[in-house]
Image (cartoon, rainbow, N blue to C red; front, top):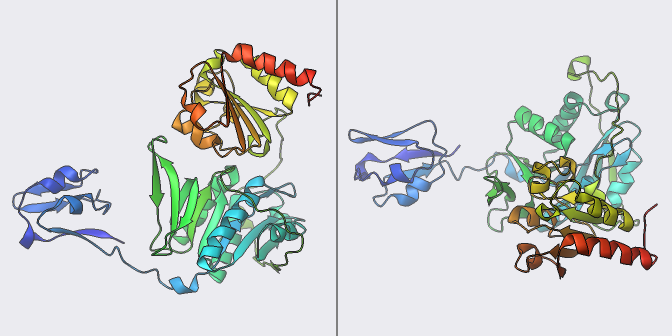
Length: 401
């Protein structure tokens, strides 16, 4: 691990390093610089030092056996025998990363009666699919899933492993990272390969979404990330693509189960399916109230789409959290995104700006949302949205059942 070293022979006792440290990890006591345990070896003090009395050691440590770690893997999450949307999106991302590294794409598929899904993964970009098909994992359970993936990683030594930042992915990936003593970057919005080091650059929002942090894992392999659904672009299915399917054998014992699932109760409440929606009509502060969302819902139903909302609309209780679009909500990529009464903060734009067509409706002609919109309507949404809904119905284009 990288650590900070003080070189007393060069030190001028100027104190610049103490003020530069963002963690308060340096202190001058007498004629010595004390490095506290809160030091993260970030290097801020080194940059501030004019006398070269501080240095980071161990930063260039090589990964043991790094050359043996090859290929980019995706955890192919499935539920009830159906691949999740994010699994297909991650394969598209993995394909790009693997191409740049001149490596192959692997997919990990776990469940019961799911072997048939392997060909779909191959058609979507996987070169090899590792399948663990067993009745013991008919329902997701952290213990056995983690054991299968840990044993597979230890045996095959992949370079990168990606998980969807879903309920399952956020539960599973940290468990694997802890068991194998690996790094893990959560909730990534961008993944690229550094040209010089060939390390994975993992970008995610930080400090409440006000900055974007890029993180590397230079000393552990595989490099692991969870990735937001809706961020990565999936590949078109290629029915002619061929690949390898390898059946995985892992002995799942009773003590591996950790939790016994007695019953699965599916909630009757309709949850917004923004991840897979082709059309989303979203409302923000300009909607004004929960009652104001009626015109938003009417337009969404007429178009056969889903209703979205900004963080403000959710925090005010006008719409439930599962409808939230943005950095602290869901990242979406629909064919059509209609933003109604949304100012267009950076946090909201980050969650929807990859939509194929964006229509913005806002009274303020200077609203930031217009900067990412393909089409803009300056006007009161309570006048514009109902008129738009009626025009669609009059043209016979309504999808409302």
